[in-house]
Amino acid sequence: MTRTPVNVTVTGAAGQIGYALLFRIASGHLLGADVPVKLRLLEIPQGLKAAEGTAMELDDCAFPLLRGIDISDDPNVAFDGANVALLVGARPRTKGMERGDLLEANGGIFKPQGKAINDHAADDIKVLVVGNPANTNALIAQAAAPDVPRERFTAMTRLDHNRALSQLSKKTGAPVSEIRKLTIWGNHSATQYPDIFHAEVAGKNAAEAVNDQAWLADDFIPTVAKRGAAIIEARGASSAASAANAAIDHVHTWVNGTADGDWTSMGIPSDGSYGVPEGLISSFPVTIKDGAYEIVQGLEINDFSRERIDASVKELSEEREAVRGLGLL
Ligand SMILES: NC(=O)C1=CN([C@@H]2O[C@H](COP(=O)(O)OP(=O)(O)OC[C@H]3O[C@@H](n4cnc5c(N)ncnc54)[C@H](O)[C@@H]3O)[C@@H](O)[C@H]2O)C=CC1
Ligand SMILES: O=C([O-])CC(=O)C(=O)O
Image (cartoon, helix red, strand yellow):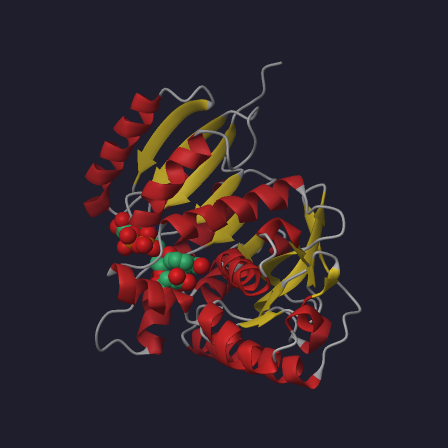
């Protein structure tokens, strides 16, 4: 059966995450081994030549599922007909830059991209924001796209989720495949809260299996929350292949669903669940079926978790206020 190719737009295509991401999209890991894709690459003018080089390499792989590559520096062209948009390109924080400056610089990227998505993307568009500060960049893009259902704008906390799985696996000796129901709450930042109180390791409650409060508070949580900085320190560059892998996981799960008896973590617009103010793009535990996600309801939140969720959500509220103050919402 011939299928219509799915248009996948990737911004920041010439960057290091782009380089780790595009080959996996083209080889079928994003959407499935039977789904042809067309890539639409968006770069700034200085990045176009490098994007063209990457496109040449993509050609040279002769991927059977890759049905075309377009490159542009115009968001209105790159998002035209997009079914999936991976917003990776962002303005990194540079020396002496305050958080407000960073938010403003990113507003200049994510607002026009949100508008271009609003005006040109396909009706079924799904957006994942990877570029930092991811949650608030997603909010900016969403605000500029009033005609797109707001739940289509998501932010990536799957890398944090995967990091937490791996740390818990090392601690317990159980393979990652035996760990379920882990949650990242809040912001993709050092305030995020990786929660193991509802997680299961080989069918047993993870917090009880670990039974080590000091490890949880002083090792696990800071290791996961500060892993991005640790990678920069070790590698001399921020996470790239693991971030690309998480972006693939995020979209693959969004399209194909969560496994029975498990959930994943995604930055999504809050509906007010768990005391997270409505509209903030915060990470929650979600189950997904038929391309639609739902926040897992009814989890009991203990005092230890409540304090940490509240701290991360407070940071998200402050970021929202800051971009409101800049007229970006
Ligand atoms: N949410 C998450 O878990 C993670 C997020 N990140 C973030 O992802 C972003 C990208 O990381 P890298 O690929 O390592 O950065 P990079 O600097 O290697 O590449 C970024 C690319 O984006 C391009 N770009 C800048 N503005 C653009 C615009 N307006 N339109 C299109 N392209 C544009 C640049 O030319 C560059 O090629 C960063 O903001 C980084 O902090 C990184 C790791 C994990
Ligand atoms: O800090 C960064 O730029 C990279 C990042 O988000 C991460 O590795 O989690």
